[in-house]
Image (cartoon, helix red, strand yellow):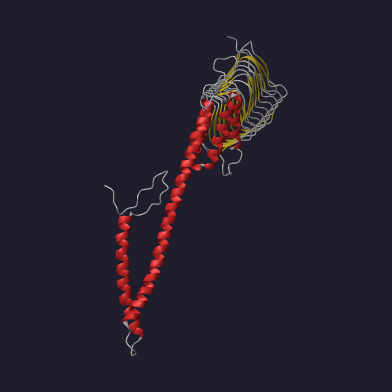
Length: 436
């Protein structure tokens, strides 16, 4: 049962002031005014009588006049309170009108996004983005609609049955709009910290460059990057989760060049790189976790060159390198943990040439090198721990040529070298060939 002595509970979307019911307030106000008048009358009489001791007795008219004056003041205060209450009600009406107007704009923008003509859909993109800026309370909902559009089935082949002219421009416009709202986390209209769900979406281009991912969940799980250039260069990953898990990168150019990973989690695990190019060069890994665990590199070219690993965890473990070219050249390992453990190198060209190992941990343990080429030449081993424990050299060409060892711990414990493998040991003692 509702208690009439308690104000109405606050509800989301309500703009009416939280006031007491009039049927309860009016009698109470009358009683309070009556009691105040009676008290003031007697109080004024006593006050005036005490001030005229030994003089002419106080006239009743004077007492009444003083009481009326004070009551007039009280009335003025009550009138001001009433005016304030009326203002609150008017403001509630105004807020409801604004809410209605924003809701109508949302419905109109959503209708435009579903239109057959690309030009109308483009107008819907801009209308929904503007609404998100004007409606902070429902900003996430507006952004969800734009992300949902990108998750819709998308035919990239002009000869395909579901191909729609102008659709690519609409999708690229949505991506540019999202990017522009991820540049400055301190902006009033920023979308940093919101959830962005692109699960299963298809991308054949798009510009996310310079974006800041500082919170929320950015989900590209199971997405397909199948053409064009998808640009994440100079982006900052400092919090939240950015998930590319289970994605497919084929015949596209993916660019994360110059990005910074200082917190949160960025997950590429179980992804497939089958063609095109992926650039992660000149990036800095100083915190958080970046994972390529269980990924497959079977073609194309993937670059991690000139990157710096100073902290956090970067995992390439349980991955398969069966074709193409993967380069970590000129990278610096000065802290944190980088793991290639339990991976298989069966036909690709993998280069760690000119790398520097100063501290931290780098693991190649339990991996298999069965074909292709793995180059670690001209590397500088000066500190930290680099582990080749239980590594199987079964058929590839491995080179430590022109490398230098100045300190740290380098382990080849329980590694096996088969006759088909050719190894240039550089500064390390050769492991005898294991004849089966």
